[in-house]
Image (cartoon, rainbow, N blue to C red; front, side, top):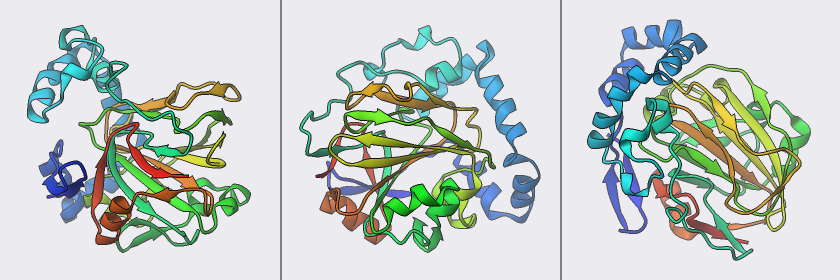
Length: 294
């Protein structure tokens, strides 16, 4: 059972988890953990499932997924019958007015839908993955020069559930450098897995890039893959001019994570998000929602 904070209702809710019984068994039993290490975390497993999700046959999964996990299709560009495969549905685009955001230059917005943790004044060698489990930014991106810019800065973790809109966006105007790819495993990014796999973010396949923003200095974007995520696809053009809210990329099937690092004293994260993080609870966030200020 995963409890998160709904900041709009100011109350806690229980997350609807796709494949919850499977996840609990894999990450909590001896047999499941052995199977995880032998097969499930491997690229081949996620690639094969990803290929299936690209086929016409996988369309049969869409109806049950929508009903079981309460997906709001009124916000989606396509109708349910227009999707060519499950991945076509999973990477769905939303209508232009579905995720409004402020153009105010001092407002920090969320890059994605998801469940959010916020850590301020970070120690680069001990960044919180989940309460009690830490990792190093140097290990996460394998680039000491870039990592060193974020000493004492802010780390924002956005966990995208399979039920979420799976495209991620830029949070300011600016220019983004090319994306750097790091090969790795394909563990789940569900809290069940985060508690069991030390430095999971540093183990999984990931990509990172530096975004030179107009109002929040240099922002480090890190996209982390997960079990059954066939691909992390970047849709922006490196070096081109970017507007706040523009799409950066998307994940194919599976729960995934976007991690953002801000330099020291660049932004102040909203108090309710920081307080819930300190209590060990993620806050539910939508793309474009205000999460802080300059």
